[in-house]
Image (cartoon, rainbow, N blue to C red):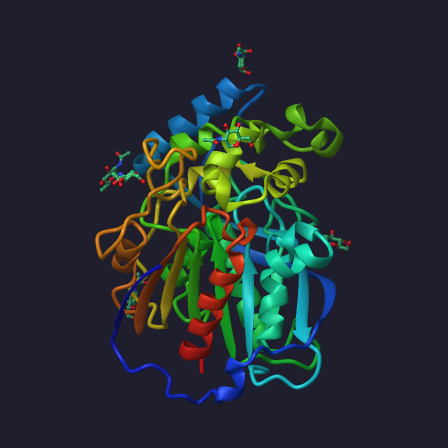
Length: 390
Ligand SMILES: *[C@@H]1O[C@H](CO)[C@@H](O)[C@H](O)[C@H]1NC(C)=O
Ligand SMILES: *[C@@H]1O[C@H](CO)[C@@H](O)[C@H](O)[C@H]1NC(C)=O
Ligand SMILES: *[C@@H]1O[C@H](CO)[C@@H](O)[C@H](O)[C@H]1NC(C)=O
Ligand SMILES: *[C@@H]1O[C@H](CO)[C@@H](O)[C@H](O)[C@H]1NC(C)=O
Ligand SMILES: *[C@@H]1O[C@H](CO)[C@@H](O)[C@H](O)[C@H]1NC(C)=O
Ligand SMILES: *[C@@H]1O[C@H](CO)[C@@H](O)[C@H](O)[C@H]1NC(C)=O
């Protein structure tokens, strides 16, 4: 495991008592809710297109990547219902003042943070929320607009990163004001993103620098590999999976290649259970053209002054290049070490952050929560929160 950090001020003093370092072994009390919102955001003007097959998807996504510098933007207001699940530890918790806002990546729902809905022992192995609860943290996990039980806005010109950041900004403000969880106003909101959820976290910090108190970016680095995402075989969801998505607009896409998805989202064969990646493929959700069209336009979060950490698997092929010649157990990402590695270079987006740190985890690929070593990542993440959010 590699770790690099810089600090502009001292860490929180050990305000959080050492009782926290023992496992917080209380089960979660969870409830599902719908959050109605109206948000305003600068959205990229991407015209509606007719998409019927993989080549038309690749042609459009590639063209949008090439023309991103000459894109035009419109300020729009959008009404949405966001589906969310709130979980809190049962009984007293030393972290009652703080809540984690969990935002998933492409083709997932909030279930990414709940072991993909797997029961029993699997949920112990793969559930971020289970771990967070044991460490005393409340969580709010959302289905992003366009996914799961949330509203599905236009997938070309509305379902985009700026819209998702505006949603996160409003939800964070409402959590602090006690408007989402009855009788609970949280002092601290910790934004935790995975993949596109991390890109949204960067946009949030750049556009609404005071929205959250700490930023945790998982499955993320300075650049991402668009060709590798195209190898997942993106197809219009309504064509590929009509029974589930027949009523969706053309611009909502799914992956159609299990090997392609495995290469992009997982580490080498020995790092994950193939039954998990097969389930993941079967229950996948969508990604929109608008999300792809706004994914490589990271802004510098000039005015964000909270702490930031990046937690990425060393075999994350989506955000680090693929090393085909590595040790014979299949291709995997190669996130590299040291200050020049992709994950460490994220620091350039946060010139005013109180602190910045990076952890590159061994034997983990892009979708951290779905690997055998997920618990190691959870421990790193929660140790960081205990230290930096006080
Ligand atoms: C793919 O779709 C586009 C536009 O919908 C169409 O023009 C093209 O012929 C199709 N290609 C194949 C191989 O079906
Ligand atoms: C867009 O502009 C940035 C700098 O302004 C440049 O580094 C980048 O290569 C450009 N991208 C494209 C696709 O032209
Ligand atoms: C949100 O849900 C309510 C209740 O089902 C519904 O009346 C409203 O139209 C929905 N809003 C949007 C934007 O879908
Ligand atoms: C940062 O804050 C300064 C001072 O309030 C403001 O002028 C500037 O526009 C902000 N920058 C960004 C990128 O929001
Ligand atoms: C690729 O992997 C091999 C074996 O794991 C390693 O020796 C080599 O340095 C890696 N290449 C790069 C460019 O990181
Ligand atoms: C990895 O597993 C897949 C099947 O799950 C198999 O097709 C592939 O050959 C394996 N790769 C290696 C290098 O063992």
